[in-house]
Image (tube, rainbow, N blue to C red):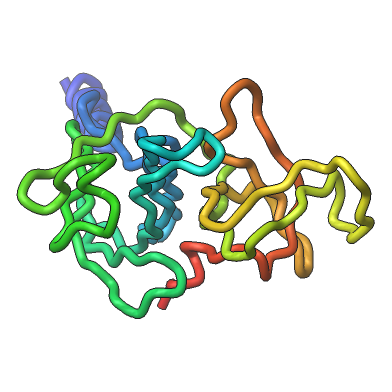
Length: 208
């Protein structure tokens, strides 16, 4: 009897230490137009980028919903600040990373009504497309034009790929003064390279 009780107690302890099968932990990755980085301490940050060509071109779309996002998770939700680099105003919102991830803002950013639709009166649904635990930061290019280098050494050459202002990126690695990035709007194949860190506004920079 004593042996059986001991086994039952051990089984109960082990069961209590295992999360329920339905439990989920917020994860870094691509949630549709939102590239999100979730830290071990609950700091969550990223970049939202959705554009529509309209009367523009694929290289220069007419409409864009672009902003950086940052906040701290409490469970599966976070109060977040969102902002466009260069603008003083910050717009608050709520990010939920539960069974139905969503983002709702206090006000719509400029251009969003023409691309994503309303993010104020109704939550914007986010679908986790791809897990990316290699992303360490995210941001928007703030230089008018910045070259992608194969290594963190400033050796200009002709015919190198480049990014332009407000192109969205995810950060894969850092070196002093440089960041290894992945361009988030690449169409046919992954586009990566090294950029001067000063040419990008990063979401993690808002951490307090």
